[in-house]
Length: 136
Image 1 (tube, rainbow, N blue to C red):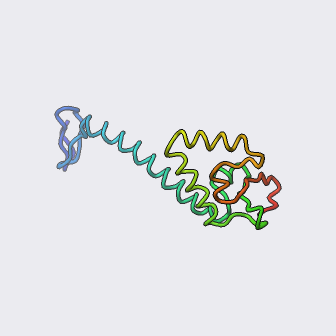
Image 2: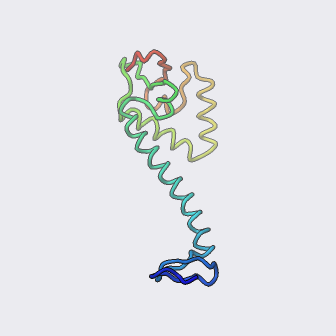
Image 3: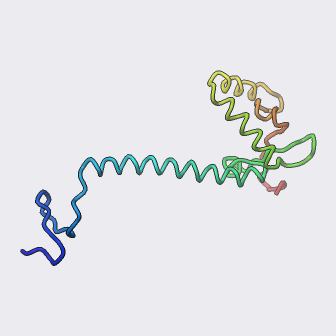
């Protein structure tokens, strides 16, 4: 069978392909798979960061939104603002960099009567469950 106009037969695969192209090598295909995984992770991370930045203004993280929780500044009788939530998360991330500090933070949370971790104490907040959406 003659190749259609503007095509040729790839010698290795026997497939009719457009002139000026070649069947992608196995190495290129494997590289594409790993790049796909990397881009998937990066875009998920970017998506989560954007979602987090939006939720910070509502006094919560994306996880807290899903679970119906809010950060609350009891001394001022208000839901956290963007800055409060950012500070809380920054301290939490800073604690997470050094595993012994993160473990200590978890122990402090478990032992604290107000159920506050170091990040909650630093931001002056307490985490509330708001199943009836009283806080908005």
